[in-house]
Every structure is written in C-alpha cells, then in structure tokens.
Image (cartoon, rainbow, N blue to C red; front, side, top):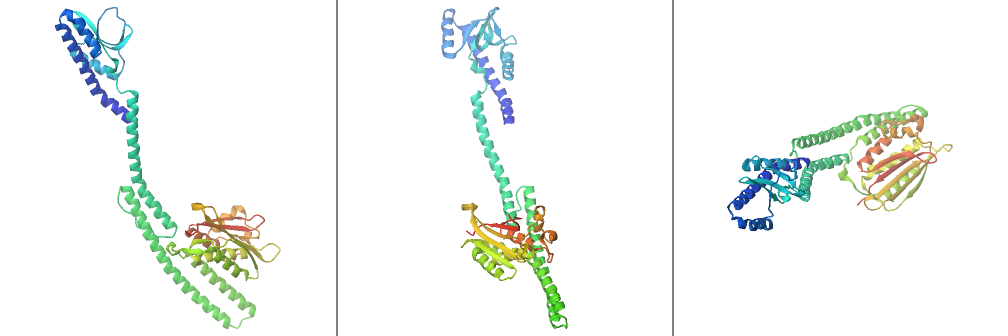
Length: 421
C-alpha cells in the first residue's frame, strides 16, 4: 500500500501539474487578451462576467500588497516552472494577498501589473476522501489477490496434509499431482516416492515375518514334542515347556507388533459386547478378579481382532505386574462409556489395576518397545512389547491412549476412540 501511494503520487504529479499549468496559462492569456482588446467602458462589465461566471478576479498589483508565499509542495514547484516558461520568469505566485486566500498569479498589461485570483481548488491534488476511496479499492483488490494466491499455495499443502494423515492412519494415499511450482512439484514427487518406499518396506517386512514365524516356530514345536517324549523329571519337563511357551509367546508379540493393519478393513464393532466377552474370558483365570462397568450398544470403527488383542494385552499386563498388595491376585476394572456430544462424542475405554503403579517420571517409558520397568512392575518375563503393541494399534484406529497412576494405587490406561458413524 505504501509503494502504491508513492507510485501514484509520483506518476500523477507530472500530468496534474501540466494540466493545471496549461489551464493557468490559458486563463491568463485569454484574460490578458480580453482586457487588452476590450473598450475601456466595457472592462467593468467584463471583470464582473469573469468573477460571476469563471470565478476569476483581477486586482491591481501594488508594492504595498502583503503577499504570502505559495504552498511549498512538489506539485506547486512543477506548476510554477510550467507557467513561468510561458508567461515569463517574473510571474509571481501567492496563496494569500492582503489576507485574502486563493490561487494568485501575476501578469502584466503593458507597464501595469495585476493579480489574477483563481479558486484554491484548482491546485489541490487528490483529497483525503479520494485517497481513502482509492486506498479502499486497492486494499480490496490486494486482499482478493492475496486470497487467490493463498488458495493456490494452500491447496497443494492441504493435499499433502491429507495424504500424510492417511499414512498415519494406515491407509495408502492416492499419488499427489507432480505439477505446479517447482518446490510443490518436487515436494509431491518426494512424498510419492516415500509412499512407494514405505509400501515396499511393508511388503518386505511381511515376507520376513512370515519366514520368522515358520523358521522359529517349527523348531519350537519340534522341541516341545521331543520334551514330551524325553525321559525327564516332571519338574525339568514343566520348566522346559514353560520356556518354550514363553519363547513362542515372544515371537507372537513380535508378529503382533509388526503386523500392519489396513484401515480399509475397519468395520463397525460393538465394543460393549467385545469388552463383556473379553472380561468373561479373563475372569476364568484363577489369579484375576475382573469387574466391569460397560455401557451397552457402543460401537466404534475398527478391526475387532486388533481391538480384542489390545484389551487382552492390557489385562495380561495388569495380571503380570498389577497384583494387589497382600492378596496374591490381581483386581482389574474395565469400564466403557460415551462422552461428549456431536462431533466431540468419544467412546472411552478404561482398564485399571490395583497394584503398586509406576513412578510418574517413568510412565512415558512404558509405551516404548522393549522397555520393562523391572523395579516398578515386579517380574520381567516377556519382550517388553505389550503396551507398545497397544499404543501402535490404538494409533492406527485414530484413537488416543493415556496412561497414568490410579488414585489409590495401580495403573490406569484410558483409550478414547471416535464412535462409528
């Protein structure tokens, strides 16, 4: 806007000064000619006509006149230069003569000098109202142009954001258009290449995991059979079988952690019924005491197998590390309720135990793969992937996971999921 004001002022000044200067020259020349060639008895009538019709007044120029200098502006300097080049360098200008304001220009008829007074408006530039009007027009045009440019820039960024969000949710986005400004085209090309690379990594990982499952579990099954047939004491056989079962469970955890879940397979899941079923199955374990507070008919979008695995991992984590002090068994509370209204509505699942909990400064470590807080949670048998699997599956379901210590002791894990449409 400042540049525009400067440019308009500079570009407009020359033509405006030329127009005003030519107008002053024409008026002075015509007035001079009219007064020179008119009969003396008709000059009063001529001066009256000039005043009443043209707003031009003629006064004799006296030495005693009190003359104020003209406005000190670049426009006035240009007007003076133009007028003096035609009427003579002795032409005088004034903004006030004998305390009467106006646009005063001197001229001569023979040896007599006169003042010609014109309206002051003849030498004014754009008024404040005109400047404000033009500024408003330019401001509106600038905003429209900025909005257009912003939309052209934001559209590729919005596509990129949506594609990145699809990847975070486990979906493969459509290829981004590799056109437009160089930076946008290069960014989209790099993103498309990254998506292809990630897809290839997922494919290679699936092949590797299939090989791990076959190559490790087959020998474990053979070892289990040999242990059954070997002439071992009961204690040794049970110990080896426990070790083999633990190794098989660890392999299963690795596979669960690495196995991708396609968001395209998500369907409405009756999470209330699923939680009731998981709670009944867990309640059959002798070392568990499971209580529930589950609202009926709550549905979420997801993969029922993954959601069942999430809840089972949370219960198993509580069974291993959340034993209620002084009882020898684990108390697990499972709750599920809907919270909020409209677009803010969420289905909230809570699983908590009554154990000793975890030091507050170590809670964030629980969600990291291969992390086991031995001192805080007791024993250390497993891969340390239980809660990492939960966190990974929850993220793929566009949900939020919160872990904190329960009031009164124990660990509380809270999952907030969007409901099914």
